[in-house]
Amino acid sequence: MISVRLDNSIEKQLNFLSQEKEIPKSKIIKDALLYYFEMLKKENSQKTPYELGSELFGKYSSGRDDLSRSYKQKIKDKIHAKNAH
Image 1 (cartoon, helix red, strand yellow):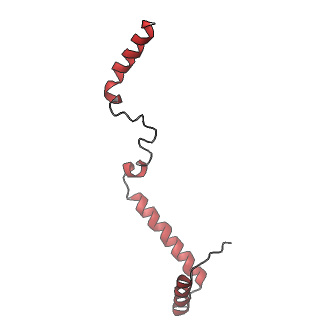
Image 2 (tube, rainbow, N blue to C red; image 1 turned 90 degrees about the horizontal axis):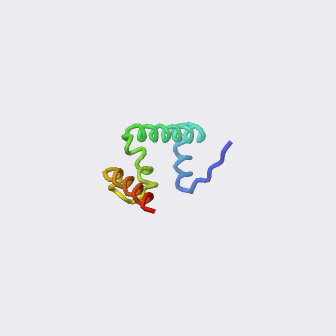
Image 3 (cartoon, rainbow, N blue to C red; image 1 turned 90 degrees about the vertical axis):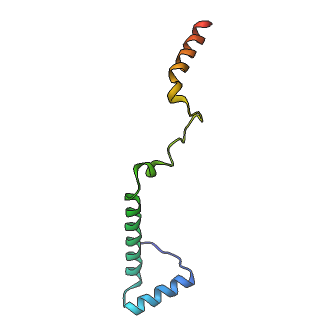
């Protein structure tokens, strides 16, 4: 069981619709939630894999954009620095 507080405007619209269509308010609310969930599902299914994960990409980034091109040189530099001691 759940209870929801509605502002006066929404409550009036809900009451009007319920009386007009002769549908219980709880059914209108359930149907509205199901519709909302379905729309969210469709919205997410239309996104590309990149869009779905975009908020995670680069989250733990080093801030350097050359690492994929210069990693071999960086490894060589570390080995040389270690052997120089």
